[in-house]
Length: 258
Image (cartoon, rainbow, N blue to C red; front, side):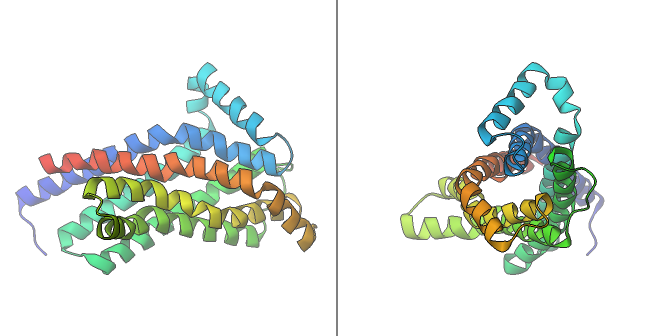
């Protein structure tokens, strides 16, 4: 499909807003996520209790903000969410330009964001697990990668695809207006999926931390750590894809002025 020079210029401006929205939203939420991710890993491997780890992380942000912003811990998380949001935004804009709508557009968005999110997130988790784990030399088991991939695909679907359908359902069944239903769906869907994905996340970490543990020992650890880890991940995913998603949508709203 051919486009005119004016349309091409407008398209690049739209992509520019997509870029700025992704960068701004990621910068807003990455500090909190980086702290919680480290705290969960160190809690599961026994290095630091969850609450203490979160407090220590926020102390670092407050007392040494520049050092924290330059750390591998922060840069990996920022890169992950910037890449994920940018991919979702660019695919949305491309779908609009090409006239792709409905289920087809949703699938394109899911596949693109899943590939980006899972690739970078698995790399981030591998690095975090080695940085903050009990050993730094052992390779991650293949099943750990599989657990992380399954967890991430659930989160992506709940963050970028499910909110559209859930918002429509809220409008039809509870007479919610479009704006409130979208915000509610964007906050609720990524949070609720954590109660399903948390055991998978814990299993992946335990396979690395305790390669020789029995099935009963793994089940026992998941039972012990599930509730507080699920709540921590809900608190983490709220900023990541809830508040961050709302912020991303808000900044992309400036597209109407193009």
